[in-house]
Amino acid sequence: MHKLHFSGEPVSDSVSSDIQTLNKLSNQQFSTLTEIIFRFVTEPTESERLLSQLSEFASQNGMSPGPLKNIVKSVLLVPNGALKRNLTADHVKTDFITLGLTEEKAGCFADQWKLHSAVLSRLAVGQTMTVNQLVDMEWKFGGTRPPQYSVAERCGAALISL
Picture 1 (cartoon, rainbow, N blue to C red):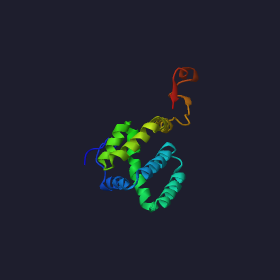
Picture 2: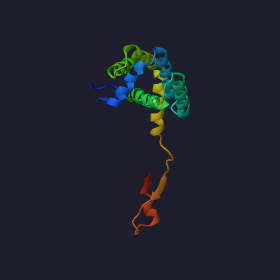
Picture 3: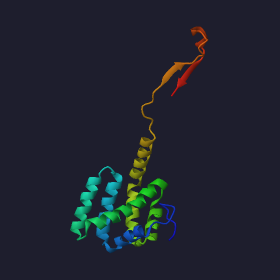
Picture 4: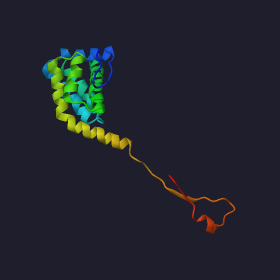
């Protein structure tokens, strides 16, 4: 398999198989599932909502929720990797086509990527800044001197430690 833009390397056969399973969905079903996925990607703290929406989607479309969750996990690899590598909608579309998704469905996902790319970029920057935030800086001031020096002699040598 070809190297993919979102990962820089080929993915496992199970991921490719999960993506190809999406071709069995109608365009309307795929569009609805894509909206559910992007709602989660733009609000990653809402995992409970994702699970309930996936269960509801599965029951409405006569699917089993377990395999659907695995498929969504595989699909989420693409936007997560695309965010890390700052990929365009065309790269995302190309990766999905390479993974076996039809061009029409890959285009639908790429359209959603274009629509949400500003929000996703802002979220990625926000998460980066949060991770690299300096927390609870403590300053300590002190002096150093060999024991034989008097107080007057040691005033010139100060130590600042962080």
